Amino acid sequence: MILDVLSRSDRYSPLHPLFDQAFAWLRSADLASLPAGKVPIDGDRLFVLIDEPSGRGRDAARLEAHRRYLDIQLTVSGTEHIGWRPIEDCAVEDGPFAADRDIGFFRDRPDTWLVVPAGHFAIFYPEDAHAPLAGTGTVKKAVVKVELAALRERPAPPTA
Image 1 (cartoon, rainbow, N blue to C red):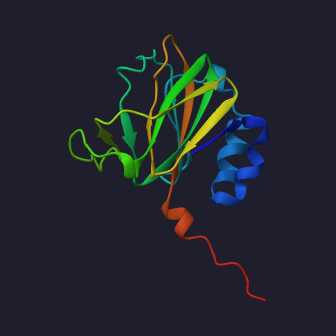
Image 2: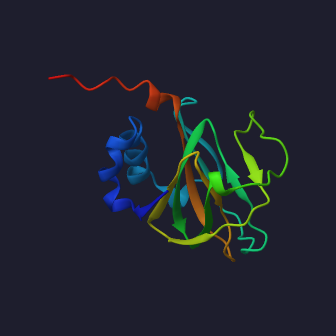
């Protein structure tokens, strides 16, 4: 899990071959005016979900995890609160993993809480169970879905 501000997103480019494209899109898009919905960037490899939901509060926020994609969750307006727990510490699944939606839920509770104000983002890998919308009030967010397969396709560095 990573938490930082969008203005420093360039430092994360070495972590995934699609991060340059993802963060460039986030920095150039007029996120405040985009309506809720899916915005394609690079087909199924890289896309954004724009949402403007109301927070559920910590008690109602559910831990979730993904297998095919990692999330870059950027708060556009409002303040997002997200719970976090390492997936290896999650013991109780809440139903079967939905491969068609790339999401599984857990009944376990987060052991860490993040505050993600506007202009900040959090990156969640498959080993990061996270519980979004744990605050109250409306928050506008952009969730970039970055396919993990592209990470495995990265060419090996040249040898000396």
